Structures are given as structure tokens and as C-alpha cells.
Amino acid sequence: MRARRVLWVSTSTETRGGVATFVRTMQQTPMWDRWQVRHVATHRNGSLAARAAAFAVGVGSFLRELVLRRPGIVHLHTASYGSFARKSTLAWICRAAGVPVVLHVHGGAFGDFYARSPHLLQRYIRRTLSSAARVIGLGDRWAEVLQEIAPDARVAVVPNAVSPRALVGQPGPGEPVHLLFVGEMTEDKGAFALLEAWRRLQDGPQLPPADLVMVGPGAVERAQRTAEDLGSVGQVRVLGWVAPVEVERLLSRSHVLVLPSRFEGQPMAVLEAMAHGLCVVATEVGGIPDLVDERCAVLVPVDDEDALVTALSTVIADPQKRAQLGARALARVRERFDVNLTWRTLDALYEELVK
Image (cartoon, rainbow, N blue to C red):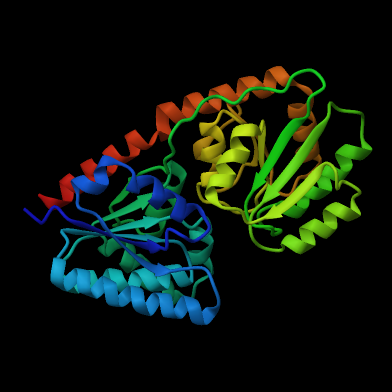
């Protein structure tokens, strides 16, 4: 029997993004104490120098944990490119030390990262995945991609998790429908496609009153200028990054989450919106179809502006459809993505590895 101790390695829980949110969520579960989980951060937001310093400090903490505490399992959270370079290095250190590794792949572009890599790097990626005791994909489609890359890898599916909340109320007659965007203000996240779609909504047939709040880091000033240029200052508020507690407050008073991304993993923003019973409008890309389908969301093709405009018009104008989709989304969270299900899945996986 191996030690019933687990070391988690990821970005800092104070960083922005879904991985930090997932780690914070799991820290509140019985699994954290049950397996005496310790957490080491090897990445944080900031300049290149700040990120390099965080990695150096994190590696030092990782080595101390590995030598002095000797965990039974090391659970590495990775994405693509630089993240994979960092975590794969630690994975091979663990292999040399005889400690099994769980490699938890979060990055939505991992398949593209592999496909675009030179031959030798592809071979390294395959060997790293195959050497792990388990590779975690966030959904069935995700697992298929990882298995195609490394047929010998032992791939398991563990979805992201969230705590179900109370179902949001719907606006009364004459009250505005509140739409929310949570993500980086970039082209790839669809922030500017959403602003253009919003402009077209204002120029089209009259709809019930609605407003849009956009939160997240990135090209915030550009998004604010775009909103002003569209003449939508009263209807669009671009707030930039806000603390998680403020995101929670915005979710609890919104009715629709919009995320027209070009690339995605399994976005926590969508899961958190589902957990509140919001109607989700998102692109059919990456791991999003593992979270929602046409029964509990409105999915649109990537970069299809007409489809996005139609979807927004529909959920603003049709309160019954909006409420129905939101209620079904919350039911799906309770059935598949409740944190109490996810921590038990990881608990069972750890039990297998320590035998």
C-alpha cells in the first residue's frame, strides 16, 4: 500500500481561470482531508519574470514535498504549450522517484498543440501521457482525443465540478433580461463577436429590454471602446476582471450566459452558469458539448455571427424557452457535475492507485 497522501500541482488558486476555480472547489470537499492533499503552485499571473520566479519557487516546494513527505500520488494539472512543458518535467521527476502521476489535462487546445508540434515533441508528448498512472480528460470527447494521441495511455474521464445553487428568477413584465459574458476579452473567447452581435440586435426588430455585462481580463479597454462606439453604453457594461465573489453575485442576478468561443476546454463559466439555472448560449466547440446540448442550451457554430444574433434574439424574446433551458441546465449539473460526484470519482481513482 502506498501512502494515502496526494500532492496537487497547478496554477495558484489566486490566478484567474477555470483551473484555479476547480482547485478552490475541490479544496472544500471531504477528499482534501481524506487524502491529506497538499497544494503547490508552479504558476501565477504576471510578467514573464514573475511567472519564472513562481515556477522556480514552486519546483523547490515540489521537490521538498516529494523528498520529505513522499506522497503516494502526485496529481499534476496541465494545459498546453508552456504549461505542459512545466508539468511534464515534474511528471518525469516523479517517474524517476517511483511516485505515480495523475496527469489532469485542462487545456482546450491540447489536440491542436499536439498536431502542430514537431515530430520529436509529439513523441515526447505521447511518452509523457503513456507514462502517467492515469491521464484525466474532462469529458468523453476529450478522452478520445487523448487516447488517439497516446493509445497506451490509461485515460479516465473526470468532469469539472460545481456546487448547485438556487434557480435564478426570471424578469417580470417590462424588466430587462440580464446577459452575462465571463471570459477573456479576446477574439478567441468571442468577446468582440458578441459585441458585434449586440450591435446588430439593436439595429434589428424590437426586442424586450435587455442588457449585457462583460467580465474578464484581456483587451478590456478595447472592449470598452467598442461598446462606446456601438452606442450601447447604457446597455453594455465592460467591467474587466472582477473577484470570484463578484462573479458569483453577477451570476445570481443574470438570466443568460453567453460564451461564443473559438476554442474551449470545459469552461467553468458555463458550469457555474448552469449551476444557477441560467440559459446558456455558447459555441459548439471543445468540451462545451460534453456539458450542454440542445436540450439545455443554445449552441451555435463557431464564428457564425448570424446564428449568434438569432440565438440571442430567441433567448431574449422567449421567456418560457429561456427558463426551461436554464432549469434543465441546473438539473444536468445535479445529475452529472455536482462536486459531490466528482470528488468521489477522484477518491475511487486514488484508491486504485495506492493499492
